[in-house]
Length: 206
Image (cartoon, helix red, strand yellow):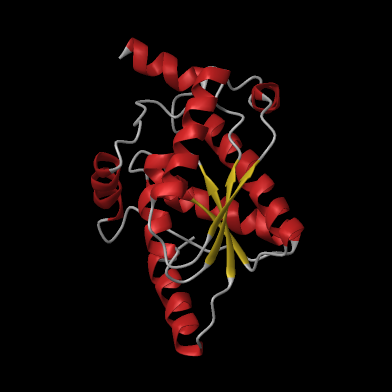
């Protein structure tokens, strides 16, 4: 994919502003810190539905803590257009089944691609279910994640469900830096691993 997702998104948003349109965007959220800048930025231009769907988080305690932080952020963050939170099903066995036989893959390898696709497919499904104009994910804000691969998967799942994917690379234009600032401002819980048992093991063994 030889595209610049940030420029694509900027062009789309410029067109919306020129036409005075405020469409609905469904955003898959991985956690509150990653959501912070994304919601601050995109709530200027969209009515937002946040989908919290992360079966990769393999302990209920960690899942519920991150969900509570997402809910708190949405409540406290000042935005131009309303944000609605939707909770996906939480069933870690779905993730573990999806990555079966990829347990020994390195971080940022094929196992992560499967995880991205699992969550983006659900985001595409919810986009269609709610009749949202676009969907995207906060995952591209992380400097540790492959934004190009995430966008490829997003486009693929959008095509499968007949919906529109909003390309992104939220770490650009100081997005990641701003997410750190907002995390400090709102005292958000910043975890040091993505959520799955494999990433936790990698951190513990580092």
